[in-house]
Length: 459
Image 1: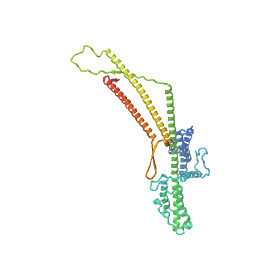
Image 2: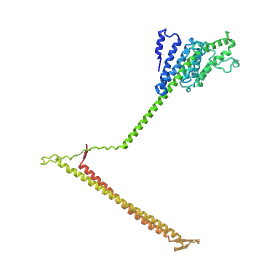
Image 3: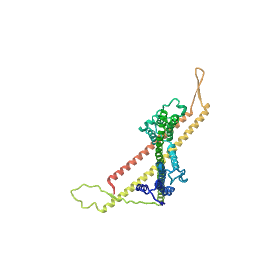
């Protein structure tokens, strides 16, 4: 891919050896070749989306442009007066080779000013530490307050103007005003501060032009404005290069970080997808095949220890034949217990069915009795006039009637029957629960006695 390899160490060695480079242009071409090779080598990987190639491509692209800025700025005395400009290619926006000309310097200066002076400034809160761009603004202000320039800056620090100053200057400006605006975080871009600082000296040149070349205060102010304006432009050029490099480097690092984050997210998604596929395949295999696990358990029956006797029995209890009957007896006992439990469950089921049927039938009878009583009460209400009654008159002549209530008698008889049925049901339920508890206690006693007599050990 690379026909002519080159690196910065080789270029530096050729420069220090002397006589290798015929002029500054040859050295600049080798430096540009270093980063142009990096772009060419990593272009294919960048197109495929490889993270490492993308990072090297972006870094080489920025460093190639930064090398062009530096060469045209610091090799100013070797620039040729040529109007030809090496413009970037339309595909990548790159200038892989360039000539040391004034036109190229002007083009590079415009690029840097667009980046450094027009980019939005990261502002901090009042009282907090300055951000990087605010710090660069502060450095630019302080560069005009060196001790060697004190006699020149004397005229431009405070906002003290002659009486007729407003007749010539529409927007007065001073160093203190610029500093206060910066401290109050009112500048949105570095270019706004640069414009205000340039305005200080342009106002001075405009107002004191009539005193140019004289020894008056106006003449001295004019000469000071010329001197400090040149110092300001030098500081602006130096700041523009550093800020442009910093902002472009931050952009490249941010792009690389975002690309790495995307790569990690894609890798995580791929890992989760493979894990999900593996789990799906395992589930399919597990569903299609049934695995049977057989574990062998050896049961050792330990006999209760006997106390030592003063004489020996003529027979041995530990013969092999003596263990078989005990094992058979244990199985027979377990079978009897199981059959007894099954019989109890059947009996309990039948008792529950009978009890439930009895409760249901009695409740049904109660509902029928209540309906019958309600019907009789309605009939009694209809035939109320035919039932014998005794009328008595009160002292004021009104009549009161005592009626024989059939409804009250009927309801009373039905209520007595319902109470008797409820008491009978409660007695039967208590008896069934008592039998159930007694059966459970017997089962627990049997299990406890069996465990104490024949303990089982799993090995």
